[in-house]
Amino acid sequence: VVLRRLAKQQLAVNVLRCMANGLLELNVFHLTAAMSVCEKAADWRLAVDLLRGMPGRDVVANEVTYAVALSACAKGSMWPQAFALLGQQVAQTESSYNAAINA
Image (cartoon, rainbow, N blue to C red; front, side, top):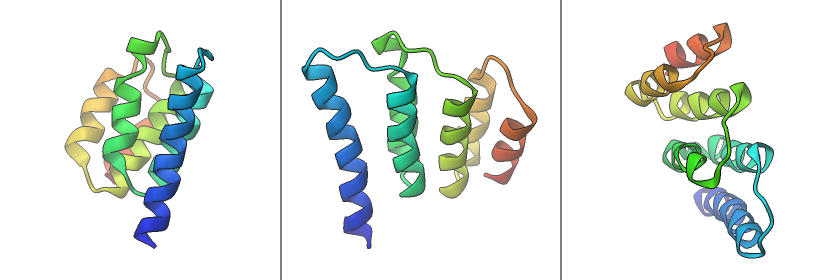
């Protein structure tokens, strides 16, 4: 089961890498989708790494992006990271606070 989860995460990251290498413009939807795969696989580190890498790709995270990252942190019981992300989010929402609290 762990190998299957890892394969899905790596596949998502490899698709992003191939897109970037093929000079295709990555956007918030591509990156959030990859983060969602990580969140479902309980890989909060990779989800947060993808979020943190967005500015370097000239991509602006949106509310959904932060919600996915917060949910990944919650699944990993990583409340310090969840609260740090909450502080970085421009427009906090009720669902953001709930996700951070659930971490």
